[in-house]
Length: 197
Image 1 (tube, one colour):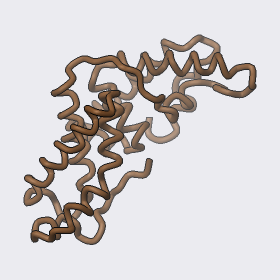
Image 2 (cartoon, one colour; image 1 turned 30 degrees about the vertical axis):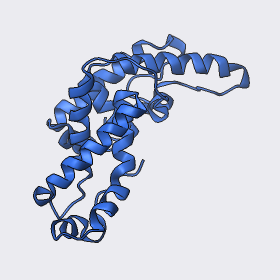
Image 3 (cartoon, one colour; image 1 turned 90 degrees about the vertical axis):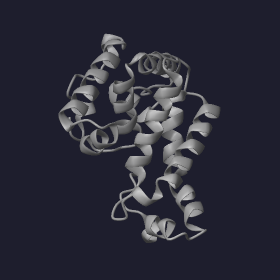
Image 4 (cartoon, helix red, strand yellow; image 1 turned 135 degrees about the vertical axis):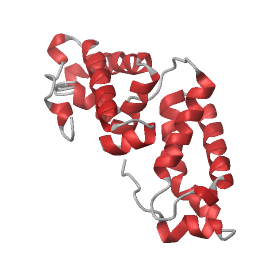
């Protein structure tokens, strides 16, 4: 997913000035990535929708504090992430696989038609493994792999330094790799390290 780094047409400034159409445009511009974050954490479409709505209510109330010189999306992700973890504490449900992460962790996932069943089993193993990660590691995986944020951007959203974010991603990947059969593992530092790790 492409990271939105700039806001269109001075959107926050227009919201601050009381433009009645600006908030509707703000919601339309940023709702999808915020919803995907909430869904990836909660695994519950109804709760994710509720968090989406609450996140944008908070954004509207805080519109005078939002910066006008950059995208509000990192701030929205931070609010949504905090809301998710404050509401669900510990939950374990099934979600669609984070395919970019899974592809990076599994060697030759569907290289032959006869491996489709095995591949589905591996995806299920990884989904369950992602669900068992500590919340901070889970958030790191979602921001870095699902949304494609850099380590620095992920760290800013999560409210930690870059070294801490790098460590969270590293330990999350180590935990996920350990769940895979030996012959299916991509060697540590190989394919997963395509950007900054």
